[in-house]
Amino acid sequence: MESITRRYFVGALAVVGAAITMTPAMAQQPAELKVGLVAPFSGPNARSGALMKAGAELAVEDINAKGGIASLNGAKLKLVTIDAGDSPEKAKSAAQRLLSQEPDLIAGIGAWLSSYTLAVTEVTERAGLPWLTFSYSDLLTGRGFNYIVQTSPTSGEIASASVPSIMALAERATGKRPKTFGIVADSTLSVQSFVGGIKSNVLKAQGLELVVDETFTSPLSDATSAIQKVRRARPDLLLIYPVNVGDAKAILEKMKEFGIGGGRVPVMTVNPSNASPEMLSNIGGDLLQGMFVVVGNWESKQQAALAEQLRRRSGEPWVTEDMISSYGQIWLIKDALERTKSADRKTLMDAIRATNVKNGPADYFVGGDVRFDKMGRRVGAPMVLLQWQGGKPFTVAPESAAMATAVWPKSQ
Image (cartoon, rainbow, N blue to C red; front, side):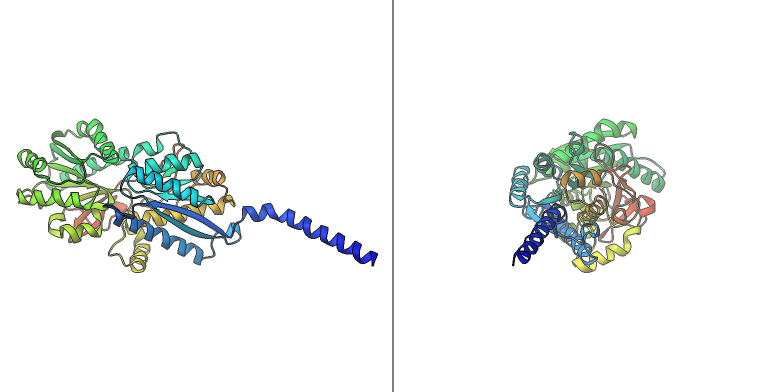
């Protein structure tokens, strides 16, 4: 009886010892890894949020179907979403609720509009939560934050590259360069950051005279005053920068009413929402024909097979930056998890910032080659130029990614 008791006691100690030994490892290798998404699912930008969610969900589905995170014993990803609403204040509140409700989040993506992302990342930075965004504002990675990276070019980079690209296209098509420039833009932070870059650095360098400079507050109830000034000045190139479809519709319809639509004044704009399916359904292909749209990522020649797959599975008519960048960002998180073999937030953030890939997750971003500098900005991220042709926006630059040949709008 005594020997049985002794053997039982020794065996019990061994079991307890094994459990104590296993517990830290088990804690480091959870069966489920939560990734947050903050995006506008209500308000005027809700469609963009829905596209972001679709892309992220498809990425999580694909990663889990292929075995999850191999370096963490096949742990599966879980997407947790929350509505950013229609203002920076609501976006910040959403981020606070998300972190409170999901304290075991390992990383997050979002929040679409730069002003929303600025508010959200004030919260996530304090929490030490790794964050990936394709918002454009230079301020996002200009604050000295350690827990954010941008997979898109910044507003400053886009401003510096977009106008010269369109100027070169005009010269090739017509034999002369535009000489005058007009601006009709939203008052939001991200828009004004872009406009500021254009006015301070680009116009003089390109020999352009600014003849129209109009700022409006969204929602735009009446575009008459701004477009009257455009009609009088007739700039060789007009930048319109609305952040939602309703404002874009008001501007383009007023241009048609005043007889300067349809290419009579060549138009460029920025923001993936201005190349969304909703633009076509709300505005129509005739008003959009020939308009250039500057974005940070889009369906390209290299991504044709993936884009076809995402189109089929999502039911969307074409793949936007909102969808493909969200898809790619989840794969970047997966890549970092595999390399670091840890779901610890700081360790994961260090791995994300150390990303250096030319294929795999880089395939989901125009230009490939995803690396980040010490500020968290993607090194060499190219500006992507789209053009509306026949009721659809096609990538026309950079040339290596082009799905169609750009055509300079013909004045009538």
